[in-house]
Structures are given as structure tokens and as C-alpha cells.
Length: 139
Image (spheres, rainbow, N blue to C red):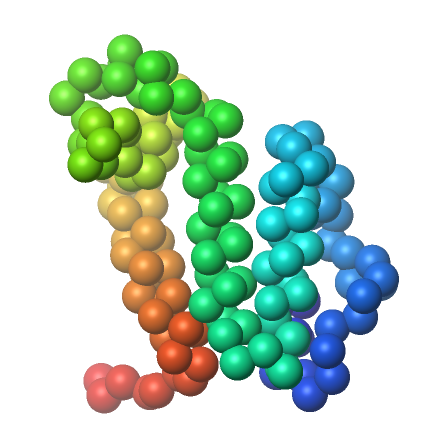
């Protein structure tokens, strides 16, 4: 649905015709998170010059809300007092993800490497989306 909204000339349908079920899932967190998702989709309107930036910002906020719910700061610090922290002294998103992997018994070197690469790939993708174009890289 995101790719369709980015590529189409028409604004996305205002109804739930393309609902993927994510709103039902997000409703378990809060109405605010649902509204952020709706805002992210609305931001993808081709008439919005800042569509990608608005979408990325909304999705980052949703991701942070989910991480904060699943991995509370006090739990992450209790599990690993030396975890990576933000400038504000709270556990970083990466620390929260590592905590969740440990909690599920999935903190193998392979999984940690996969997640780390996935995070790096996503971080590289956001500026590309914000610029609104994909430029092929030389091999």
C-alpha cells in the first residue's frame, strides 16, 4: 500500500479499502498510534511535497511507541546496566531491540548481525525516501 501510494497519481482512498489489518493491531497500543498511522498514509498523497518525510517521521514515532511498550527503560537497564543509551540517559532503540531478542532467546550472533544490518538498511532508506528518488549505485 505504501509503494502504491508513492507511485500513483491519485490521492490514496480515504476509506479502509486497502486496510492491511495494521490498524487493528495498532489499536492495541493506543488511538494516538492509530492516528499516526492514518497520518502517515495521508502524508503519502502525491500532492504533498513532503510526503516521504512525513511518512518516515510518523512510522519512526510508531516504531518508537511499540518499542517503548515492549521494552520499558527500567526493564532494559535492569537487564543490561551498560546498554547503549541516548543523550538523555535512556536506553537506545538498538538496546531495546537487543533486550527483546534476549528476552525471546534469539540473541544469537547471527540474529544480532541480521538485525544490525536491517537497522542500517532502514536508516539508509529514509534519506532516499525523503529526497524522493532512488539513484542506482555503482557496483
